[in-house]
Length: 251
Image 1 (cartoon, helix red, strand yellow):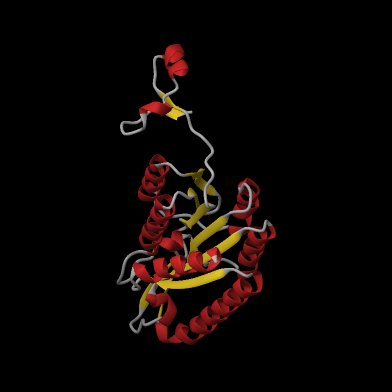
Image 2 (image 1 turned 90 degrees about the vertical axis):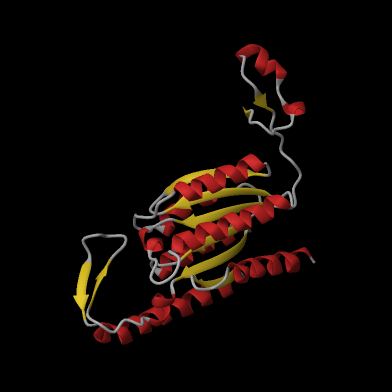
């Protein structure tokens, strides 16, 4: 049961519960749906980076909301998990408009700001995923690549279908800084460095590209649909990739 909200169908009111409590409750039913989908969204500190465009977390939560809407519109069950070092908020999949409202409210209220611990989070999260599901993972993937690989492997071990949307700021990909700059960690506020970017650029780009190559390799080896998105990219790129994947999967 759940509390009655204006707009709910009256025929689903549990009148017996009303007689006992004087409050309206709605009977909820497990519906046969096309699939069960989980939106797993990274809300760690690094997702708060904005640069010249929309902050990565703002991009991620808008993307998650759009995907959630599309899924519920086709009567699929959708759930949400927000995480950093642990799962911060979680909703099981449901098909109701109320669930979509809960998802968007949670996304709107969430503020990124902690470190990331993907392996620890997925150890907790994966056992809670019921039946074979579609898992949509939205993150900048800035964690130890071995830990990230372990986390993704846990998902695939459960035979879940996985889509990975990596959200990055353009500055993280090309490191365009030229003037002396203070770089500050968004996950550890005491970590700051003032330096000439020219001295860091080559090393940074080498490590960044190595990370990206390994991430792409891991996704390919595990059969995960991987899509890299820049915050300068239009949303239709991400939504198009998602809809194309769902179309191919249904054939």
